[in-house]
Amino acid sequence: MTRPLRLVAVSGGLQRPSKSAALAEHLLDLISDNIPCEQRLIELGNLAPHFAGAVWRSQLPDAVERALAAVEQADVLVVSTPVYRGAYTGLFKHFFDFIHQDALIDKPILLAANGGSERHALVIDHQLRPLFSFFQARTLPVGVYATDKDFVDHRLQDEALIARARLAVQRALPLMEMARQAKPSLVNEVVMA
Image 1 (cartoon, one colour):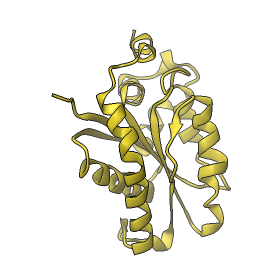
Image 2: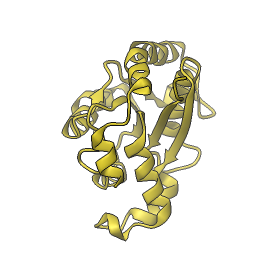
Image 3: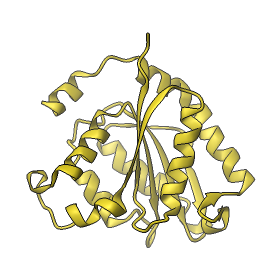
């Protein structure tokens, strides 16, 4: 019997409710509709007071360490961030600065972002892909970018965006299925040790 997919989403939104979290939850739901999953949403807004001033991973409290371990041990990641001044938030980057540099090798990552207008849509290709390329992760081919007008009461409402999210997940399913069936890698065993 094949185990459930360990699916973790990281939302860089700092407020609650958060459009980034809503976007991440929508993508989590689409994935779990297609593959048996154990899913977890990590909201950096809740964790920010616990890691914002830390310089070393050894300084982090247990709650942040558990979130980092969940990311490192996931089969698939969904990352979603608001765009501030043309890039992901500083706290989003700071969180990923604590991730072991080998923990995401070959891990499929679905990229998503949201901003006030379409002019920030390239953040996925110009900011998020290079960040996760450093980690040697497999950024999935279709990213999902949402603007404020795509939400009503912090829920996706725009049909074109919903169709894009479905397409992103459909195109990613073969890689996600491979990740679910793969044995844990030596890299993850080293990271967890």
